[in-house]
Length: 235
Ligand code: UDP
Figure 1 (cartoon, rainbow, N blue to C red):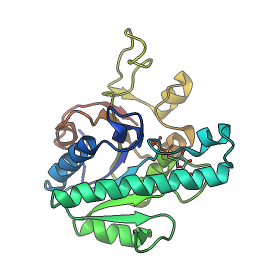
Figure 2 (figure 1 turned 30 degrees about the vertical axis):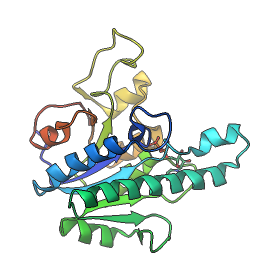
Figure 3 (figure 1 turned 135 degrees about the horizontal axis):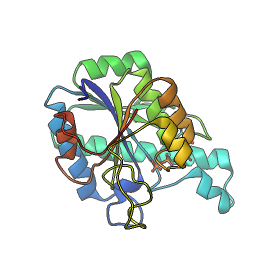
């Protein structure tokens, strides 16, 4: 059974859309905030990375004529927008939190450093790491593996809208079956789309376990923290 004292929770930007086609679904953000508060009250130290795909992705922008580096900057700013939305929802739940940014933009958020992050985590603040890694050509998957390793998290939890890693996309293939556990190498060898490979490799090299689980079912995050077998563990 895994024991969690400090975690890094990765939420995709797309999941914030809920049933919408673009932007932020407030009920979804509120649901996430409630679940995060629930485990913060258990004394778990929580770092969070949110994606920006619900607003902008640099790579898809290149098809529309955007410069990749500028597009990636737009994507990183999108993650800041999402992070502020979650921060605000956490405030409404009276859950203490901080937004750190990988790129300087005070007073919107404080500039990230490991020391600051650890200080906030140890003082019980939910700490949101925004703007990814601060560099183009990376993703928020890499941002979250990087931050998880830096803050020495016990695991990176990837909250998605499916309940784990499947042999094929369960939304397209009804015969797909779920893995309880899987190794990093099996992900490569089977060509499974769990995270981008840069992030997967970082997790492997630094022995950071990943748990992929359904965050859209309220209560799942808490069950996971209580040690219930939810989702798929990558090790
Ligand atoms: N991005 C970046 N560097 C980073 C993290 C993100 O350039 O370190 C940009 C990139 O353009 C990416 C966008 O921000 O497409 C949004 O992040 P991502 O696609 O990871 O969001 P998600 O898929 O989780 O919604």
